[in-house]
Amino acid sequence: MPRIAFLPGDGIGPEVCEEARLLLEMVARHAKMDFELIESPVGGASLDKHGAPLTDETLAACLSSDAVLLGAVGGPRWDDLPLDKRPEKALLRLRKELDCFANLRPVKVWPQLRAGCPLRADIVEQGVDILFVRELVSGIYFGAPRERRTRPDGVVEAVDTEYYNTAEITRVAEVAFQAAQRRRHRVTSIDKSNVLETSRLWRETVAEVGRIYPDVALDHQLVDSAAMRLITHPIALT
Image 1 (cartoon, rainbow, N blue to C red):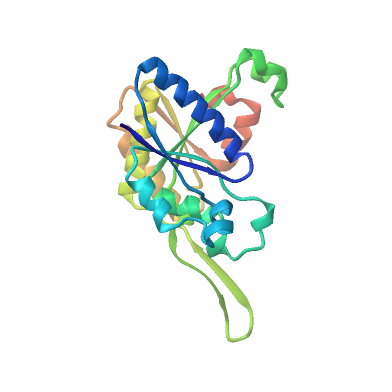
Image 2 (image 1 turned 135 degrees about the horizontal axis):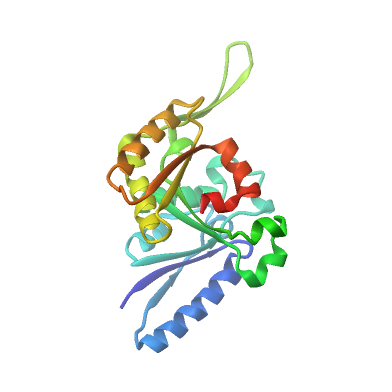
């Protein structure tokens, strides 16, 4: 029987996860199968109950399950906690421990919902159907050193290290190219290679991976121009 770690979390998380549970039960009935839900608190809910955003027991349940269904973590009531106690720490630890290195974020405007899109009607009518593939277990969220320190003259400094290596970039790029093969055979790689050394490595590595997928067109965009194109000409990124 498949095991699913069920982590409703905070805010709208429990509401969303409850609907997901009902959907899973409906699918299971039609497929004549069953599954086991292992429910545990996470984020702020876990802080309130156990004093930690992610307990070792909850992590163990996730690692021993076939899938993890996570709602949301965080909220204003925990905003003043130190970083190591914030609900978001649970999310970062789960990503790292489960090696969830690729985050797939689809953005699509359905014809029936075009009136609710904040973009101009003539832009939306061209079509919006984008799949963002985001690297999730490296970069500035996980690079070291990561610290706050005080200089001898009393000035406080904070350091967050941006780090990537070729293996990390390659595997997430492969996810993007393989997804593109099932979609429109196009990848737009977004970076800041005009000023960041990590982005230069990112662009070079993605270009190398692109040579393995000759049926997929590769375009490079600086994040500044990509943000502009998202609101003025999103079809160019689809």
